[in-house]
Image 1 (cartoon, rainbow, N blue to C red):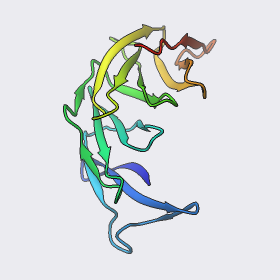
Image 2: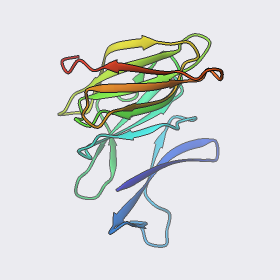
Image 3: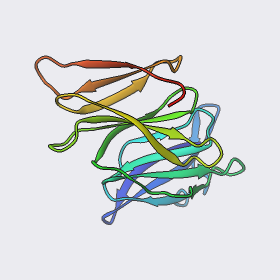
Image 4: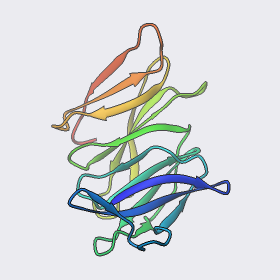
Length: 169
């Protein structure tokens, strides 16, 4: 499945598409694809590597969805949306599916926050955070899940911050 965010009539949605042999297909044929409402302004999206959960950053919240493995439909997970102190700009899931990394930049919060993912429900629990000047506008864990890197918004010079990931929290 592929999930894509879009806005329509001052509301934002996640649309679902099937992927077969690299080809996108609308599950509803020529009709509108299945859509699921999210917060207005929702943009950054991340899917856990097992394909069980979708996370979408919105205005001061993170929406979490469980993926129905039989048809790809999304259902809000317990506790969603999860409150967030700022506006998420970038989000990523580590390759082990244990942590969600959320980067933000604003006048009040230039942080990289770490949330532990409950592997049964997908629910999020904040476990750590780091700050930088300029805020994080891109974040990615390495392929081993041992490190996470964030790119800040400073223009001269740009900075990349790197952190070791404690697998416990």
